[in-house]
Image (cartoon, rainbow, N blue to C red):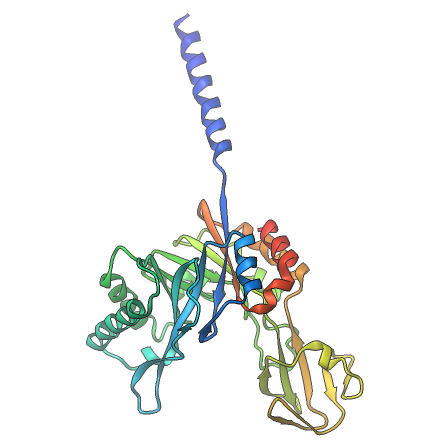
Amino acid sequence: MKYAKIFLYLMASFFLMIISSCGKEEETELSFYHWETRFELSEDESVFLEAQDVDELYIKFFDLVVLPNQEIAPVAMVDFVDVPTQRIIPVVYITTAVFSEIDSAAIQKLAHQVYSAIELHYPHEELAEIQIDCDWMTSIKDRYFYFLSCLKNENAAVVLSATVRLYQYKYPNLAGIPPVDKGVLMYYNMGTLTAYNETNSILNNKTGQAYLGFGSYPLPLDFALPRFSWTLRFRFGQFVQIMPTLEEPELKDTCVFELEPSGYYRLKMDTLLDGSFLRQGDEFRFESCTEDELIRAATLLKSEKNQDHTKLIFYDLNPSIIYEKDKINSVFTAF
């Protein structure tokens, strides 16, 4: 009888554990980056964000760059024409040149200046999180990581997050782990856009998959996916420029362009377009993110989740988002 009671107790505990674990639901939250210097939402955008239950936005506050006089300074400061009802997570984009030649004392001062600038321009009362976007490499890793530590020391109560590129994600022993509370894996811009033989430098799941599946990353991770497009201009096989406003319908105008077997659009005549003089024979590669490829990306990233509450952040928020509601929902559902 004694052993029977013990057995029943163990079985009851086992089933309670199973029920408890099954009842624990994973939470996923949808969010967006805003990367323009002017924050002004249309009524349609506001309605879209509310309908999608978007509670927070990642808004780039400014870029931190090295000026021609070698001074490190913020540029492209965001102008809040509207103040969103959503929580705001300030994002600071920092060029790698900032950390190429800077000593520890200057880094401490810089961290204080960055935190003060964010606080000064933060339109809500309570600052909960700051995100730093810098594509660090081993040559600046120590100085960049020290900056992150100094920034965290400005206010330990504020969550500090940092973006993580695919190669940094796959090779943490080489790239290092940033000293922050959490990371965001940037699953886009994974190809060489200047390469003539590239097919899609924004999103290529064959390339991206090669960086996944190597174990859990040491930081809690959110994930970012692209929802933008651009056209890349080449001359004699050499990259010339990015043309973000040249869309595929214009490229399909057979009076001006002809589609080549390579997938490039060749210009038939000299043309002035968006302030750029385009020469006959220039070639153009249109890159975008199809719904199928984004769903595939979301499915791949689903296996990389390492926390119970995960955010899927799209880059970026702009007026065209209102035409992609179904696409966004399909990708979010797959994630």
